[in-house]
Amino acid sequence: MVVVIKWNMKKMVAMIVRILKSKFDCFIIIEGNRGLGKSTLALHLTRRVSRAFKREGSDKYKFHWDHSLIYTKKETKRFWHKWEEVGIGDEMINVTFNRDFYDPEQKDIVKMINMNRDHRNLFIACVPQFQTLDSQIKNLCKIRITVVRRGLAIIQTPNQTIYAKDKWDQVVNERIEREWMRKGITHPRYSRLTTFRGMLRFPKLRETSEEKYQRVKNKKRNLVAKEEMGINEDEEEAKKPINIMIKMLQNGEIKNSTMVDGFAFAQGVKPATFKKNLREKLKEMNVENKLSSYYWENKAKLKQTGTL
Image (cartoon, rainbow, N blue to C red; front, side, top):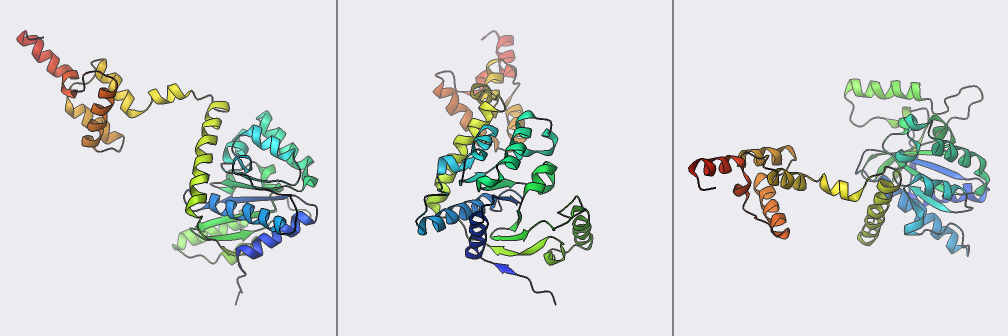
């Protein structure tokens, strides 16, 4: 019978602190589907590590909502130049996606992680799937945590190999996982994975912490859009469904109410709600807010009767 090692937050934090005190960096990757709590777990770990050092009278590894949550490549490079800091790459897929390995900035980041491993930083990267990361990033990872459902994760570490290039044994573990899928197993025995080291349970964030996190995330995402993706906010505003429809109405491109309904359904919105929002938006613009007055079908009828 296989005994599954059960971890708690206290034990996990203690292990990270030991790694950092041994004058090594600690690069952790948390993966999992959207909404399962990757960022929640990352926040718990970084803040608790920060508090552990504070209890010992150390001012190292301070957590700061604005500085410790990292989204852009520029921020990531700046972080790895520092010493004894905590950081969360909250959407690290934007920084280390394996199809971007020719990107000069991504190369710089990989070099900095390699060169500055004695800087004793704690960095936690959150990604949807470990497999999609640059291979060099995967090899630099010390601990891989897979969130399988809310509040529950599995801990994996690389195998200590001499000749094998793949320390994560991806081929073997993929075969094991495919067997589970084929058999329709919904609660797999994760201990079969060759890199498995235990199970970890973690709590939800407090409401105040969740609010702070959401504020920073929204602000930093806008920074990514502007600095790295070249997205203009005015252009994005123009692409919103309600603004697209207003432009179409004003240009006389909408035949009748049915076309508006179809557009609303395509956006996953109830037609009645969409039309109400349209009227409110037109009213804000100080223009005619009666939708039927924009339909070219109505305009054509009025023209024929000579009332337009």
